[in-house]
Image 1: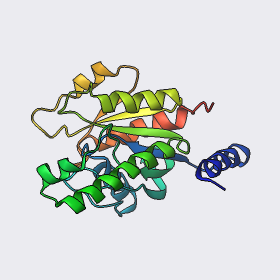
Image 2: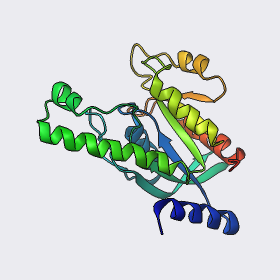
Image 3: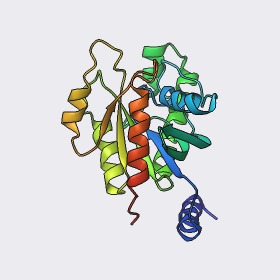
Image 4: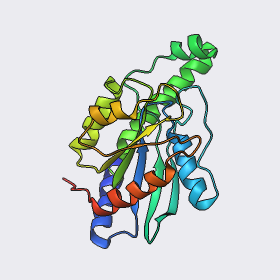
Length: 217
């Protein structure tokens, strides 16, 4: 059975038999803090971590999955499976790893190949998640080709989206710019690194992903 057949079968079985918790994908471009946020959530509620982080783009090149994470806020709670996906990019050039990060040619080509495969894997995971925590860098221009492409894919699939405006600990952070750019989705300012505003994020996750159900086509 091929990959897409298995994905469709998995979705059908979940529809028939139901599921105990939502599967939430953490998405976004490279180096916006997806794995840092995944680590923050998992560590806060389980004491564990998801994976390593790096300043070099595409450190996460295959999806990581943590099951049965229970997020609580007062008397409310949400049990989720978290999928930390590879960063999505519209262009991956091996020369960038050489020129910007000092890798040799062979290492750069291998990194670029794995990064491209990671993007494909991230897109495939969209068929099997129930909601998306979309991480954006609040210090950057939100109207990038990557951000618009990701949001377009999520909206086409009718996936509930919660935007995490990350890096609010930076001086040039502007979460308000993200809120103005994408008013159709709730935006939560957060510092995944320092945990600033984590409680608000957890409250919004419980409210958004518990009440909003995906309308699968």
